[in-house]
Image 1 (cartoon, rainbow, N blue to C red):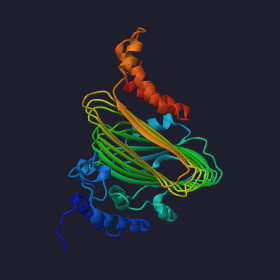
Image 2: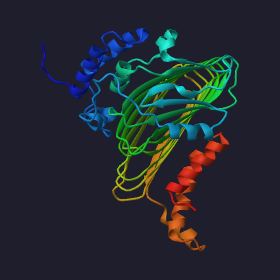
Image 3: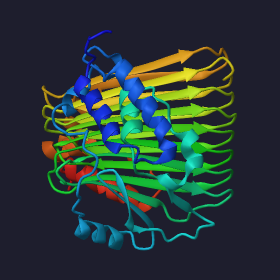
Image 4: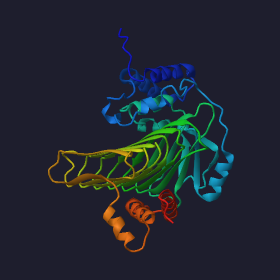
Length: 431
């Protein structure tokens, strides 16, 4: 028997101890996923410094020794004032709260009728079991081991949700300060909906959140997903978003990251229907020592589909950005149009970006392009503005805002576009 230790052994041991502590007290239809998740971790461990997909983002190091993942439950003091403020801000909307990853049904508000929007606890939807992602990644496997809470959100056939569904993920200090959540979104044929996900911290809490979102977009459905990340500078986050598109469906993802100690967003889209459209937009503004990593994959399986990707980064101080975008075009995916772009501006000599666009094509009748740019502010543009009476600080802010606006302009929700614009202007010190 081999006694060789795998990387992240402590985390694997904690996962095994956690399952032992459950003593059979777990959601029945999640047991198989727990078992498979633990088996994956025991065989593969967690990503070390040589792991290609995580070599710039040391997530294992960031959480090792900081959290007691073997413990089963923690008492949670709810941020009631914050939740009430959120309800007032979005009065009349569907609002779901997740506290340290745990769905809080008591304080959530579901205002839509059941025939327009169905929201069930993951524990009550055994039929959603097959949609849970397989263990292709250590943190996905960790999520499958620990997850005990989440929801299944279903939009019925040919229904359009007038108001976006607001999901608030709030990290609080409860002695454990970690959470695992798994949500499943079912957009039935011909349906339309917008989902807005806010990730916040209650104060300057130290926390770790491991989240999985699964989207099944059926034929002719149109789904937009917005993600706004403003966690504390002591918060580590890893999220896996899996999307499966059927024919003539449209899926659009928007990711805006402002804060956090270490943030890793994995977005994987499988385009398995003819005539689909996939849009991916991202904007990350990092300062201090914040580390933001966006990994995206689009797998074109069927013909006559379009994918568009635009990610922008503005990085200051000693912060670090990472972008890794992959586009696969299978042999059957003829007439595919796939475009990818990543642009970054470094505002200090100690800011860092690692960017790696990738394109693999097996079909011969396609239009595909990818590229990345990294640089500092254009001194000629600053000079041009200063020559017209604008001071240097304002000129720099105007150029940065124009760069960020290339992403913001694609937001379809007017109130959210204004909110994001205000946050960006505040960060860039634009009057």
